[in-house]
Length: 446
Image (cartoon, rainbow, N blue to C red; front, side, top):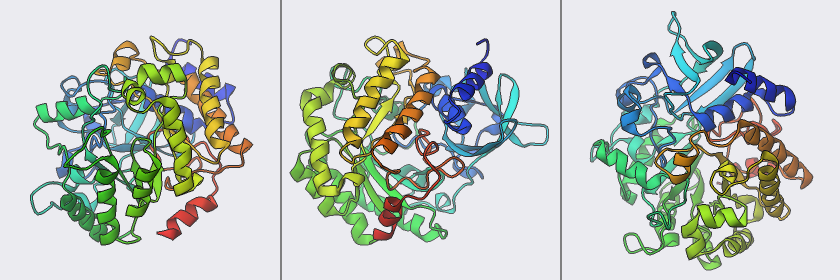
């Protein structure tokens, strides 16, 4: 193609049913973006909401490799609008890559723009510092450290356990840098609480509830690393569930409660429901049987792919199929050394998984793979999966939903280009711009 611009324009022409905004968004998510110093934040003392590193690094370099971006954090997300492609409002999670052909910089008038191959392709908006980030907990911790918000303020992301008990090369998921991210933040002297105290979480939520007068925050997600033994004397269901119980007792009906955990036995899943969780994310990561074993060795060892899938289906009996939303990491299907060699093969495999779950009323969602350099797959696949894979996945995802008469899953905000706020993939940007009944009902039920 000769340039990234030519590649992007070719894909927009070949796949006209995929929103042009999603093509750029997927390319930024898979390959990252560079930041001119003029586009960096002043951390928690500035006017721009800084990147919180809420669970993974989502960067293409370690903190020491990011230069000034490691000292003055980039914004949590950016919004793309306008430009020569007349982009509709598109929220993109920031993944820093100093070597990216995309760059955010201010022009001579101080207006931020996104540049590709040296040409300005859109205006860039950055999230304003929310009022609740300006207030500390009684122990001096920041709200951003304890209860950061993402998706342009829609989602409170509560990573209450910042490491994973799948540890080492024989257990860690091969694309995941949760444990390294913990280590690098501690090495840099940054505050990065390993196990968050439930009272700290409640105090942070009190601050958010007080100062979020527009009620922009609509949902919270409880998540963290897998627990194979116990944390603070609690097993996985009880550990994550007891936060939900405390939140629902203190703030009944304020937010949609979601939990990301392993695919657990039915009795454990019932505990989540009993604690007040409304949406369950038992992520299946990658569909192909062989790749699951190679890239998720701990999950294969402790649970196994077939049992994992059975548990996902069982959980639909407790939460209802529409409220079980397993994530997969889009792109690792093509990761060397074991991944598919062609986009056709990878899309066929991923679509098989989508059809398996959607035929039963369960709607998966996905995160666009960012090849973090400290992970095994990041080291061997620094460029990630081809952009064509990601664009064709959006096409296959929407078609499969239509085949089974499904609409966008609840708890993700509005779908459609120009409206979506889900920032770590474009699946919501690529769906019809209608407000699904299920999402409205979920919001009204709390």
